[in-house]
Structure formats: C-alpha cells, structure tokens
Length: 184
Image 1: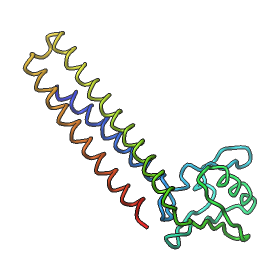
Image 2 (image 1 turned 90 degrees about the vertical axis):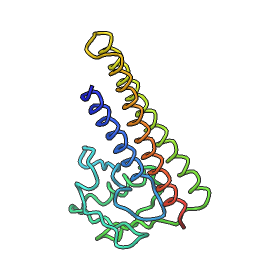
Image 3 (image 1 turned 180 degrees about the vertical axis):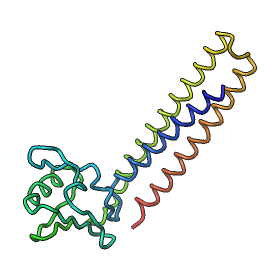
Image 4 (image 1 turned 120 degrees about the vertical axis):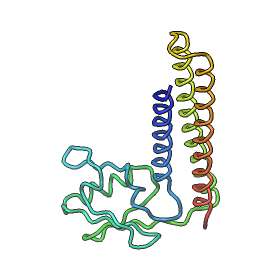
C-alpha cells in the first residue's frame, strides 16, 4: 500500500513541477530569461535552443539581452524570436540583441490569468487521474486478496488526503502567479 502512495505522490509532484514550468513561460510584466526557454533557433538546419547559441541575461526588469557566440546567428535568433508567438520584438545593434518587455495592458493581464487558470486545471486533472489510478490499484490489490478491505479504505483515504494537499498547492501557486501577473 505504501508503494501505491509513494508512486501517487511522485506523480503529483511531477504534475506540480510541470505547472511551475508552464508558469515560468507565462509572460508577466517583468523580463525573465525563462521567457525564451521555448524558443528554438534554426541554426544551420538544426532546431537549437537559444541558450545553447547565446548568453541570455536580464540587465533590468524590462530588458532581456542576448549575446550570440556566433555573429552569423543574429538573423536566425531574431527570426526565431519573432516567430515564437511571444509578442516580443528584438532589436539588433550588431553586438547584442535587446528585447524590451512592454508593460502589459489590463486586457492582456486578464488573458494571461485565464491561461494560467487553464494550466492549473490541467494540473488538477492530472492529479485526479493519479488519484483514480491509485484507487484502482488499491481495489485490484483488494480483489487479489493482497490487502484487506480496511486497508483499501485507509489507502483510499490517504490518497484523497494527498490529492487534496496537492490541489491546495496548485491553488496557492495560481494565486501567487495571478498576483504577479496583475501587478503593475
């Protein structure tokens, strides 16, 4: 029974980690290097992550700088950022690429909160699926006479408590992200 709980907890931790990763990609009013994590540059015919072609930094809260190690990559990096759908416009001065993060409008902030809420719902669904799988496994063990009915009920209660705990954590993460997005 403990292995079922441990497995369920591990899977719920992964769902929470995936949510955090999705949140880090959401654009808030601040410049962060994680905004560009999903950007892939077509570099000599190979899709390459931006951080493998250049150093990415945030000198202030509204600017991201990209300094490519290969001068020939400037145009490819600019093109990849424009095509990424992030709504960012790179400015190339020949030595460095600068991206200014404009302040978000109220409508855009509300849209981002909706996107964040969607990510939270996906994480909750994943956690509920983990709960369902764990409960089915406990039921199967009971039917195979590996555990008693009392152990099954206790296990299901423990799985429910675990699920509730992780759902509270996702809600806390959402409220924190919502506050960050709505901050001017």
